[in-house]
Length: 324
Image (tube, rainbow, N blue to C red; front, top):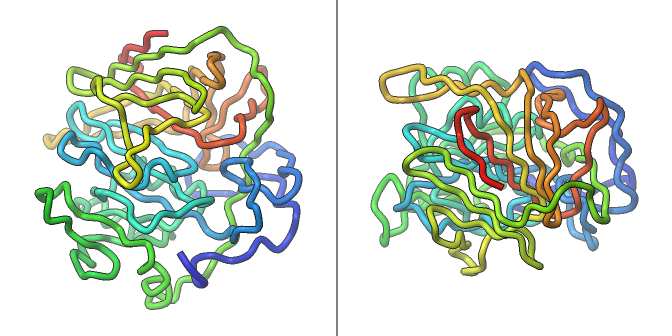
């Protein structure tokens, strides 16, 4: 993304507290800004790169949509059930925005609530009438692939896959759509809390999450990070064919409720609860809280830092099985 979507980081320090979103949650705690020029969602050096607004993209996880393109570049990925037993991703890009991301899939309220906590430009492809109305009533800047379907400069259909598993976002077109909609450029997202070093916690090098009969996620620790497997197969990025391997994996238990005949869900992202934070081959049980629209880990009332790098968040029903 170029000049209209990205702005330079103007100060060495970033705002010390979280921004306020529309999602209800805990009062923001004072969080120290990262030292030096580091990306706010990874804690890693910017190395002089531009550092502007975050981009949130709905990424399809149906078996026919795999392997996906661009996920290894995401700073932060939320994985949550959509309909049935298949999950979907909200991938947040900031430090590294690839040219192609997808396949892109339809919006859901709990995903754009998560994106709103980072003031991200939200990209999706289609939605139900009620969800369109919720987006219209919000203050989110959102790009709908159904409006730009296969237009050649923002969304393109891949000929080697069938709809709805073949719509891809071409990020070079985002400057144009930002300008056409007269959206105001925003600053980088406020920083997450990071701390390097060996985290405390018990060893956890193989973790299996069973969402249901159709979705199983396996995390296996290695020198590259936690390698991701989906339904027994390595999760690779189609752009590089490298396996997905985030530095932080955070497993959150939240109440899920099916709300219509299509199997759509409500997911409680405000009440907090039990969670498991995986870092450098260890696991720590922590509490999750919603702090001004962001889900953050806490222990004894203090926020728990992430280790520098990419983060993957599995939001699971309380009934899901987790094996350590």
